[in-house]
Length: 359
Ligand code: GLY
View 1 (tube, rainbow, N blue to C red):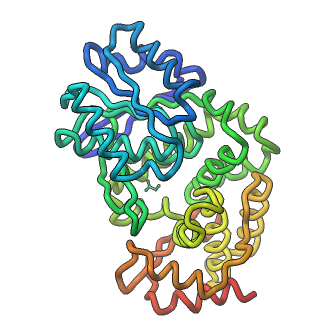
View 2: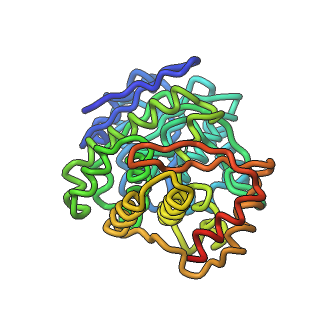
């Protein structure tokens, strides 16, 4: 087992990473949940495989635990589902010293985390991510939120868990498409910070090979994110590098109403786009773009927009609810493992998009 500590000005919390840790959940978490009530929030796909198992582990150790099952899928990150959770907490008499355990992917973690951050102005919270994307990204760093009909993640807060418990063996049953989804974020970490990680990924030929090193790979990604979040918890500057590929990735996701592409697939397209732009603006060599494309393709991720026109990309990027300023910060790549944040006036963005897509 490996352990990282996220050290923030206001709190420090551990990330435990280890194959088989899920079965040892109680011993890992007892310092937090012993003699307390716990609510496990999980989704309909995970109830049978993981939820019931965790209920049993906690029950066998004398924890008064209940499970709340949300429908699997992004539509659960809603105010409606949040209200249902609050009713559940009220009925079970959850107090500030009790624990809410998010057992699932990004949707479950974001929703449960936002519920924990707001219930009684803040309740104990633990993350047990089950998807690769949640293990390397969304369970760490404290971003929690729900979606609104007019925009994704618009209502949320920064609320860190007391602990994150990552068992890479839980990935064994993850469908290939969702494994690749998480790999997009893993590749992102290579691009923004770790040439060695990127080279290592280039040498691994398939999912089976990656799984042989997965504990280590997850550790490296979590460590990069930990370091960045410690430097800039609330994303005023450095943390923006985690958004590499996300400006155009989000445009792709939202243009297709979050249905055609998974987050990782859209980010894959967005990373190639921004790498191409970085090359056109003279920030990096063409070889960087080619290596990135090759690695993403090998991982089973898309690298091109099939049928989105420049005008649609421009409109979607510029009308993003979070981009209502005169400038847009773009994370450009200089080399594998080396990125830079640059501010561009919004009125230049359209020209750049044409420059990449028209060729
Ligand atoms: N997923 C990007 C961040 O946590 O900042």
